[in-house]
Length: 116
Image 1: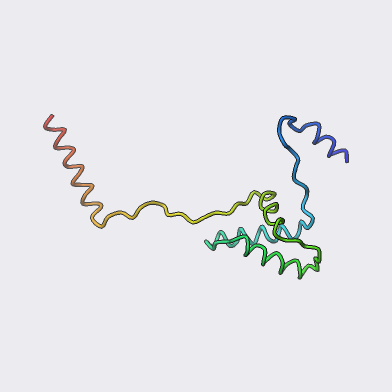
Image 2: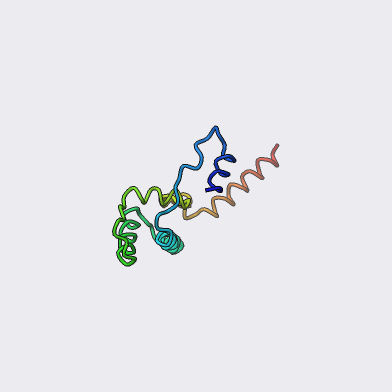
């Protein structure tokens, strides 16, 4: 209780701070967070539905009966600094004759500079 009072005194009064509550099932959340990180390291896309399926499976194994689900996922991700990511491409594909065209362009520029 004393820590909570100290945190409230230190909190910035102009911002909405200390709004998130502690997780109800910390062991479950730690397992799920590690599961998500493991899949992301293996370049496997993880959706919220996949997370909920895994959480429900683990909750059944841990004998957690009052697990709600859908809103939990959003709060869990916010608490743990996770977000949904989409796959993007790095850049456009380069043309087949990319190197030849670059060298030709460089030669052109060098010749134009010599003429000036």
